[in-house]
Length: 470
Ligand code: BYC
Ligand code: FE
Ligand code: FE
Image 1 (cartoon, helix red, strand yellow):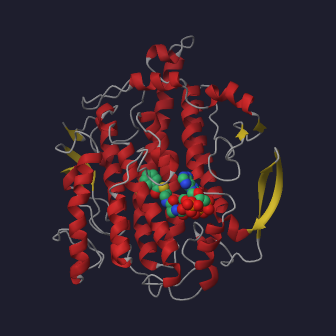
Image 2 (image 1 turned 90 degrees about the horizontal axis):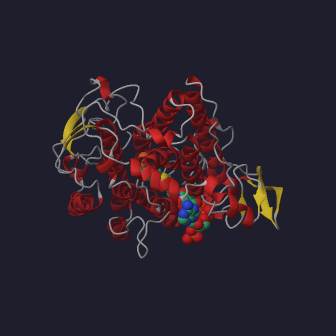
Image 3 (image 1 turned 90 degrees about the vertical axis):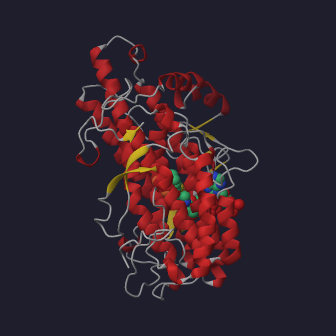
């Protein structure tokens, strides 16, 4: 069944109607979800029509469907990429065996933990972004924010389905707790650090969708390889939505850069701030913060958890198919240990380095994204180069946490850090300036002075299209 059944209370392509107990349990969770959305989702805009795309089928072209909907009426549901014929476990100790359709008892706790961690980030991001609609730089941007928000909501549904369907009573309890933790709440925070960071201005939002959603992409790629088939198929479908989130970040930052370059060309001797633009070095500091925080999301460089997950066949590498060999036994990974103030190269068993292997692919993709921003400067004749911070910079998880490194990854002492940190990470003054720019623009086809218009409208609509009916 690839067509999505929208006649159901919970749209789905998993034949939910044939399992009445599960259906009832999810229908009990549904109003709690809607309450959570109304309390913690986008503030103020739940009664407005928004031009959103909705999946009508899980096939490649199933995305082409756009309509004006009020966000609480968005058809959140359960969509899995269709079954492959006889899916097999693709890596680890069980390589070549049939993929699991039910949770293997010996890996139940690990799987539950991975799924809960993945699930927790989805509502967390919606909470972090909840006030941004009030200061959107245009209707186009407001609509993109809401598109991202409803899809993150659906990602939560995807994981809650797996918890309800496969983890019994504890799965249902975990699903309830996913609606109770709160981003940034001191007593009951979200699980991973980045998802407790405030994301209160649009420059942060664009950096978040660039760097943090891309962690989402890589974690989903590795879970899409899972030998636990229902998880793999859920993640595969979630990945189809992720591309747009990263597009919002990549092009969002690019448009801020373009606007600044235009102002610099027009007023070569002025501080861009005098003309309401965001200085390029300030943008770089925002990049440094979100890039380094998001690097933490891959976990420690050397991790027995990651080795266990790989051996068990429950969390693989991104694009496992492209590797020649899928057990990663008798292979080694060279990484830089930091001990007694010195960096030394050390070889560790490949399986223990799976977090780092995943991070490598992620870093490579970010480097390309930063190059794209640099081309923006080049095109406008501005001599400025954005840099992706070296991965040791500003880390709070893993080998480099607790030590200080500069943007090139060179170890420095605490004094060196303190004297330079205001040039590396957003200062209070930077944040206050960015905040001062956050004034809503709600006129059709108009954009705030600190950001250039997009190159293309959504779905071929005219440039002054009313993406959100206020
Ligand atoms: N913050 O052995 P280690 C997304 C904990 S984003 C706080 O290295 P492991 C999205 C760790 O839990 C993708 N704590 O851990 C994006 C462990 O704790 P315990 C989300 C952290 O397990 C935008 C301890 O430190 N998906 O979808 O190898 C918008 C030792 O660590 C952090 C996933 O994360 C941190 N950053 O790796 C919306 C996939 N990092 O056990 C959505 C599922 C580590 O000692 N999660 N810790 O108490 C995983 O695969 C793994 O849990 C991690 C950690 C990669 C996160
Ligand atoms: Fe997501
Ligand atoms: Fe996302």
